[in-house]
Figure 1 (cartoon, rainbow, N blue to C red):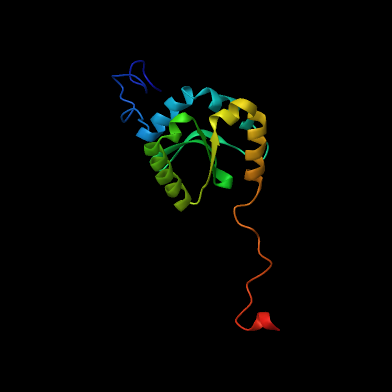
Figure 2: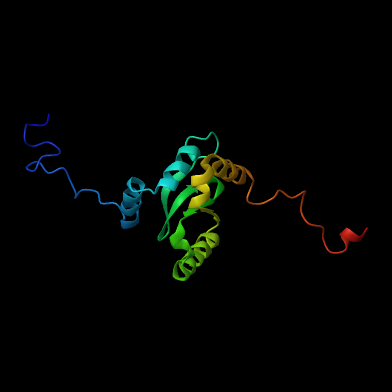
Length: 150
């Protein structure tokens, strides 16, 4: 029996430990989900809830937070606005893409103007790409030296 004023969640009764504080990148991702750009919102409306292909929005991967990620297909989708045409931002984007590729992700960059023009078509293209496997299935092991010449 817990006596009044001594149970969990009260100042007097303890309750154990400090409140849980998320990692900085998780806290930032949560804030970015609330502050998505209009093209990101449009694309998210078309990508969310698709059977078999589940996307996450503003998902942290290492030190980066990607716009959309299909973890099961290792696919990252970035919606690029005008700021991404700047030389400094292009360099940052290349470093980010290289990090993601080194960690097994395919990166697709979509122009925000294309999303605004036809979000449904952009989403269909992304879903089609996600449906394709990252690696193609082989038809058995490669031939040993000299066997392919028979």
